Image (tube, rainbow, N blue to C red):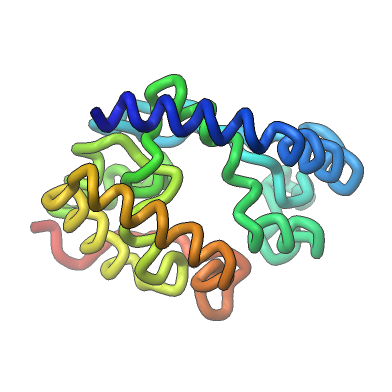
Length: 199
């Protein structure tokens, strides 16, 4: 039922928000140039890699060695507003349609984090990653990594259709009040460097 719900809701939202998608596409192209979309390999169900797609919010600039500059240096006022609105996440509905993501689940993080998780944290990959999740409606990037992973695992253990509905409604509320978008002192969030406990 969850997969059917994900598919139907994604189709409806993409149809209803199609004019918004076109407008955001135009604004990203005007403000940041090409490419309009940000594509990155992320771990999905059971850690299987997939290409996540979002609207780009940062400049594509590197240092003299070819390494990307920090998030703070690459972020623009336009990109910051786009992130605050969460409209940059709308293309992820395509990943939902393809079955790579769900509407609700732990957020897909970076591939390089996989070997850093302890056994408990790795349980977040027992379900499909989500466009939104329990951690996102309980603090988002304002949470520490440890707190976020505990909430992810709690969702894995307690997931249900009605919990997903609750999370979706809370997500709409969070989008409007723009809460927890960035970690304190960071444009996005500090990178995860692993946990002391490996249990």
